[in-house]
Structures are given as C-alpha cells and as structure tokens.
Length: 266
Image (cartoon, rainbow, N blue to C red; front, side, top):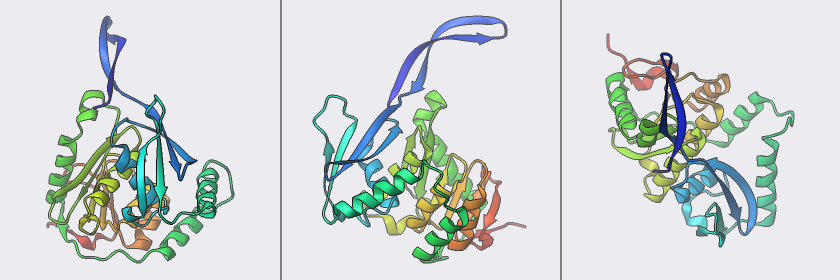
C-alpha cells in the first residue's frame, strides 16, 4: 500500500496535538508507446501494468492485450516511466492518439453532444442480460468498501470494483484518481481474460462522461456511483442502454437510465 506518514498539527476543540498522519502517495507515471512519450498521469504507485493496459484499452489504442508485445519499466532510477511496445501501432496512429490527448486540455470547440453521438455510433448497444435488486447491489457495494484499504487509512483515494452478474468480484482497485482506479480494474479484468464476465461496475465517485465511456467499452450493463451523475454521462448511458445509478448508497440510489435491469420491490 503506497502511503506516506507526514507530521501534522491536529486541531480539535481548541486543543492541538503533534502527530503523524497517513496520506496517499502521489507520483507521476509517464507512458511511452514504442519508445515515444505519449501520456503522463498522477497516480498511486503500484499496479502499473493493469493501469497502463486499462488506459490503452479505454483510449482505443489497443483492442486486446494480445496487441501488447512488451510492457516494462524504463532504465531510470525513478521507476516512474514505462514503455509499451505494440504489435500493430504505427507512427501515424500514435500521432492521432497524442493529438487527441492534447486536445482534451484545450478549448478545441468540441461539442459535448457530438462526443456522445460519435461514441454511441462507434459502439453496439449494451445487451440486457442482467436483472438485479437494490439489496444485491448493496452487497456488491459493501465488498467494494471493505476492499478500500488505502481509503480506510487516508480517506484520500477512489475505488472501482467490477463484478459479474452473480456478484463475484472480478477486480478492485484504488487510486488517487477515479479514472486511474477504473483503468486499473479494467486492466486486471483484461489480464484475467474475464472481460466477457464483467457486467456491473461500482464506483466510489461521481459518474462522469469519461467513466461511463470507459465502462461502455467493456459492455458494462450497470454502473453505480456514490455521488451525482453529469448530464453527458446520463445522455451517453441512455444512448448505450446502460443502467446508470447515481447517489448509490446501500439500498438507495437514483436510477438515471434503463431501470428495467433493476427489480424494484413493492
């Protein structure tokens, strides 16, 4: 577990105490593809291989882990640079990927509705094979909470848990970034060759367009988060026929799309 103890002055009810407090470690990770620098993310150190595989999959750089030849640390003392060699990637493909990542940090004039439409058209509708109740979802969420070891020590990490239709936990990951936590879990599912079994995603965060789009690429049928959903996330979920549940806390939540997968008790 990547935690760091720092000295703090704790103030409570007019009294101060000098103690050490555990915080989540934050380090940069630079990803190189075929020796070309492509992306830098701030992350909780550990589980770099599933993080990178999940990231490359959800960014459309790879369609499966079979496209990866090697994935290893670069020869530097930091341990914060990793190089991926791919079978089929070309310089042109990498330029398009780098350009797309760069444009996400600029005002490029892209309309949110266009993003939803383009992604919806590129993917098939998500099948409706899962039927579940809120008590069952509460059990799945409980498994996620119990697995949040870093959060229990620091209160400073997000988590993403991927389950099959029966509630078996396929992958659970934590990170300082909610996107990284999900990429790690997706990478673990890909490594375990269990992508077809992944049906339900439980998140400890709000539901944004980016998270829902990552889930859609894995055909996740039900996605829940403890906080609110954004407008584009709801629109994309509706277009993809994904069941999206905001403010999911135990046996309550707001069903934003496709309620037919949820059996509601009278």
